[in-house]
Amino acid sequence: MLDIAFVRSALPKSGALVLLAEEGDSPDAIRAATDSATGGAVSRALEAADFKPKPGKTCTILAPGAGLSRIVVIGIGKRADLTPRLAEEAGGTAAAALTRDPAASVAAAELSPELAAAFAAGAALRSYRFDRYRTIEKPEDRPKFVKLTVLSADHARAREAWASMRVVVEGVHLARDLVSEPANVLNPAELAERCRALESLGLKVEVLGPRDMNKLGFGALMGVAQGSANEPRMVIMHWHGASGGGKGKRARAAKPLAFIGKGVTFDTGGISIKPAQGMEDMKFDMAGAGAVIGLMAALAGRHAKVDAVGVVGLVENMPSATAQRPGDVVKTYSGQTVEVINTDAEGRLVLADALWYCQEKFNPRFMIDLATLTGAMVVALGHDYAGFFSNDDELAQRLSAAGEATGEKVWRMPLAEAYDKLIKSEIADMKNVAGRPGGAITAAQFIQRFVNSKPWVHLDIAGTAWASKDNAVVPKGATAFGVRLLDRLVADHYET
Image 1 (cartoon, rainbow, N blue to C red):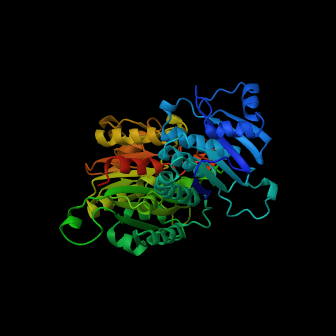
Image 2 (tube, rainbow, N blue to C red):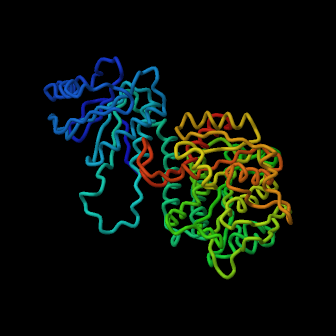
Image 3 (spheres, one colour):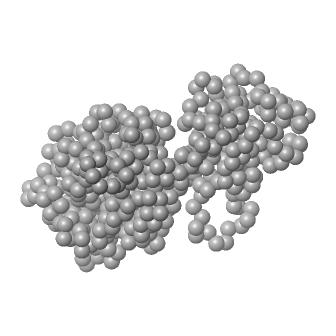
């Protein structure tokens, strides 16, 4: 991750320098000192570019003098409108502009410690790069930006604010790493082992194997897995930040928050096989599980004062002589039966067993599941919003607010009896798909049958799990959508 330091405000003598410009402001001390040291290069460049300091606008000055390699002026709009989210986006803009400079400083003396730390978080998020398998890349093609120094008037408090933000960024990077991994490396067993490694953060990690799940009666999840040579796993991660994980009345009374992730490490569609074009993208059909894993790492890393459990169902959906067939009937852990009309609607089968197990085992305060579930959601909302469904208005409102605060935006979709009727089966309790109309909704109606009236949210992140182009704090590739969203939800409303 980007090396970030916080120091007292002073004009740097080398490297690149980022200056933040507000609408209607007069230059701060460092900006004035920089302009003087460079013989007015900053003011001349801004005037020549007719620079307006709107959020996201930039002006770059190359080789300005005074020992600096470049100066990047970034607009942040009006001071009164500057939020942590906008400060993060400014940091992401800076990181994108500084890829050719090994080190840079940002003049953040006029920002509060929290906003200075948010700027650093945005830079760290945007500078992420998954390059584990690059072996012959030319040096000139590699980003050089590795160190950011934040010049802050209250650098000690900014450093403290960054400490908790840093572990959330690390959780995002972990999730992005997992989603980026190829499926020949990251099968269910390997992903479970990577979860085990998080015990070093203080998480308690349990892993259920095929024998355990067959004994429990996870017929829906095991039905998806039966076509693959890679055996399934279910991983349960515990964080006891409120009860301490000990014994006694307090520990027994604690109801954890529950986060459940779909972890299909590769999805061919099974017998209902997908088209070949684009199938390589199906390595990220475990992005829901990746987000849950990243979130649990973030909660543990910042010692969140909350009890939480993360449950991820890990399978590979393959066509073979042993694969589940269209028309098969499976018995879920809940006892309900499902007629499998389409084996490519497998994620909801995995979630069915995971959700019922979670509520029966842990009696959580609420359950939030995340899944790259339906192409229908991409058709409905594109790639800017994740759609969500909920049976609890307060939880839904809080999630929406967290989305606006973090930029991981969500949009509530309807649930209704009319849609539920569409998944009625002629030979079982339900079927796993209805027709094309309202496909994301009927999928959510299916999942709701395994919620048992527990406060619940289903997040369909099919359109937001992978970015086809760079965004403010998200480079092209795995986004880790959900980690920052849910961490904010927890921090704002559920910590003791």
